[in-house]
Image 1: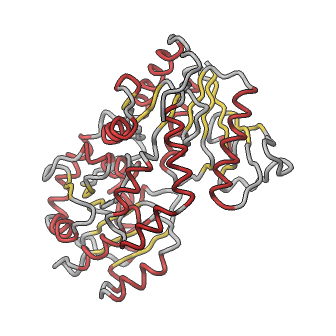
Image 2 (image 1 turned 180 degrees about the horizontal axis):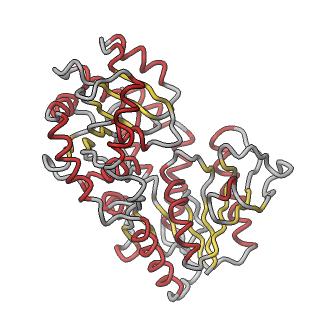
Length: 405
């Protein structure tokens, strides 16, 4: 079976990319030949072949980590609107020229058989984001030409007659697609992200807790709330800082792992709120496991997140989770048992949920969190993907007609 996977840029810290990386090794062992169409792999140190539209350089990605053939598709662009449109055209050209049994896109591109909606529904994200914006911010968002392009690409994708299946990484996303685009239920497949249950395990606590805490000068008895993610506005860091400032436990620490251009502004904001050195900015980390091992609780009050891998990794590592009802991973949270769910913008509710933890109760809830995701291993994810691929290979090809947008 020959499958093409489309992802514009491979960022090793990105959720969609980690999904691809985790799936590829298992799929290769199943006899699936995978070709990844992308602009570049971050950190590869390579440049585009001649810089021409549609130019490609096939080979093994850096370090061979992806276990697949890599076809570089890196047309010239300026700005993100041109970036996305040029990539879509170039990818569809390659797809038309090569023989693939199935084409699976992780981008909103209509020339695919399968779309993995790892980024969720853009229209829903804009709705959620508008709740946190001023009237002028909402107006600017509506007039933004890039958002207009993404919304149009989304409509075109879901109206494409070629589209045969949509992989949703949560029931939340499946419901949103059905509601916004009226896709029939038979086209929507919920396949949760897989996690390496051996790599992410409660034993990380014994392996890393003492060392990481000593490097931060944090005592064993002090609570550490951990945030992991990039895109701080979307993932709720401003609200988290406000809620953290309300905690009565002044010895508790908040550790933020991830990269964002607003980090400097958020540092100043934290200082103005009197948080001082209680907030630790660890930056992006190639290996987040030591940070899970050092923490007591994981927090992600995101405005919109289809299913963040970080929540899955944290739960597998034995951490209870506090997240929002606009996060797909909330489907695995049982309030008061393995974590808590609240509104992303309800600062008082978020502070209240954080107050309910101490190191002992967090450990007990973390054990239940691990049990909650015990069935979400990499093999289970790959088996579901293989079952989907096999079923689609037996399906008749639809006639070349389009559903109304």
